[in-house]
Length: 439
Image (tube, rainbow, N blue to C red):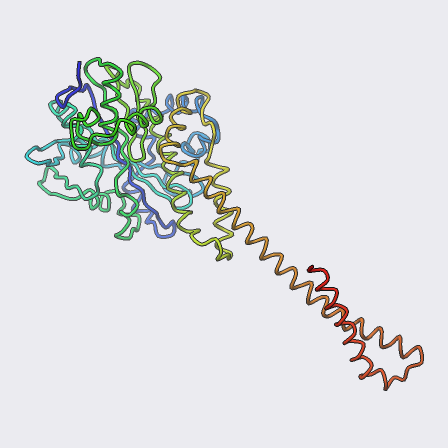
């Protein structure tokens, strides 16, 4: 059986994630906690204990501290932010006024697609790095075909895309984020420079069984947000055979026959076949591995931008260097779980986001900064030694002159004429010694 635009899906959702920077001193916390509460309250209608217990027994302490601080430190905010840990919040309106976020429309050509927003989450990490995530799913089962899903994914990842609500108001995704998500967090109008494309975490469960080659083909098309059939050469965006094979061989996650995933720079796609995610593992568990990796990537981008000139060394550069070392120690983990699948997913995400290579480049830059610091310290030390040596010369001249007086030379002869002669001889000998040592 061949996969086409009309291939049906049992279920579909996408979680788009945007990146931003924030100033911890300008956040309106009163407004923030009027709009948001702790994210764990949306897990199975507030019954989060079993989920947290599972995560607690699945992941290492270091990772739990990074992404689930509520489990390890009980520092989840109630009405105050704690910038030493991740502050993970969820928008109250999505639960209290769900009708506001239903049957939202997006026009694609002559077609209108209706969708709902399930939740909107806010992540405020240390180092003033922020993210927001929005989960979309279709309102009507009639849209659950791969052609419509592909069209929707192509549009929803752009902040300029316009969406229409029940009250007939139309707004861009950027304006929606600014007015509904980031309204209590001061942002410059150009925050969208961090988001040429919103990151997309895509989950599709197909209604029929297909061969592995067909599943690979649709993984490529959905993951690359290409027209369905592109991987088979059915469009002008068809990939070369080598490029297609490279993606499937290096970026694909394949463990069981009933699902596969593809990790790329802007998208993470999982497609299963009649294998629904009954326990929401891919939403409540593995999605946070995705967030964890995006956080590392965005931090590296930020620190690279700030340390742009390694020859201009100052206190701020030293602070950034120390911050980078501390961050890598805290967040860059070879393993995060007692189970194999989270580690496998993290490895693929790290590779597709090019995190290991960027860390290596940053470490080279840090080594150069350390070298400049060392050279600067050596120059300072050499200058101090020169000053000490210069001052000690006067003591030597005085001692020699006093010795000559004690040995019969007239005091008027020695001071100052004789002392000057002694000083000249001492400086002459020091100069000869200096140039001899430089050879």
